[in-house]
Length: 463
Ligand code: PFF
Image (cartoon, rainbow, N blue to C red; front, side, top):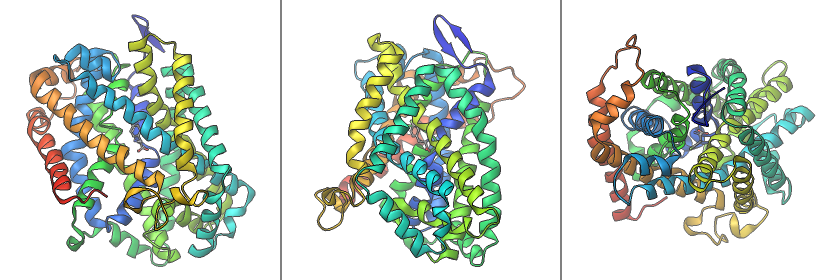
């Protein structure tokens, strides 16, 4: 671990890459991506998502890293330091608020992964021989009024412990162990899933665009997913960039993180959809999709209980490296801007997130008003968790990404962005397509996001 002017730094390029990939790779890839694909009708969603990752995700990722490294500040401080005008720090403020909003539902699902780890160890998951039994196990688990809250609390406590230890000791170390192990396990599971009877149908579903499915919701969902999965639009990458030394090459690191994140999402799809067709499960299973479908493939594997245990342990750790980055954004704000100690900020923010998470933890049967559907009290017939997932995970990130593009492309300016990206470039790796990135940030990204948002407002098709 290094420290410059009292501010911590990653121990080196690998430390940063692991931590940033750890932030990006999480429930977004393995839980949210598959169910968004299912809701978006399969291959078409995947295609639009991939286009957004390339045309919007990658440039915004580079812009956030550049803002962070140049300013060495949290999102609010970065805008204050670099972008003239009273308005811009509020964009950082929106990011910090979004961090709390996302953490407050993400930690609930993260708690479910710990619950499923328990079920894998106890052997209960081996009873899930088919889609129906597996669904029954999930439904009963999430409808419990106590366990989901306790597990969410436990998860936030773990996040707090890591964040309190600080950037490099806590965050880096967790990511170093996880990433390679998760990757190997996902490849094994994907091989098993694709070779199941019906496996090829899942493959086809994932990669064949059905244009009749094209709708505003699919486009918005894919945009939100591209940003959510790469941890963009709320300053997480500004914050992580701020712990980067000037020596590192931002291009290489950014591109690596984007490829790793997208690859893991596609791998997760290659596991879930073949398994879904095999188990005859319902593709519209919503947030429960992964939890319902996965146990059925563990049951088709030798040493299934062992695989299930390994999988849910790794998924929980992947979620942890992401919750850590969410909490870190908010903590960095209180530490840099308000002068709080890291300990105080981390404890306070995780406490608030826990309180805000309780309604999401109760939204799957425990409290019927929060569960969506006919007798729900919430708009659009959505459950509380899904509503928050859409508001913070799609809308808030998209608005944040739009404003970041305007700030960087038009106020800070493309020449400064490119210079910041090149800083520390050892020239072994020429920057391919630098002018393209400038054009994407300045014109394509803001225009694309704005068009989607305007269409949504005009047509009123919010969710
Ligand atoms: N990218 C994380 C995932 O895919 O699970 C979620 C996330 C983390 C979103 C950090 C936003 C963020 F700032």
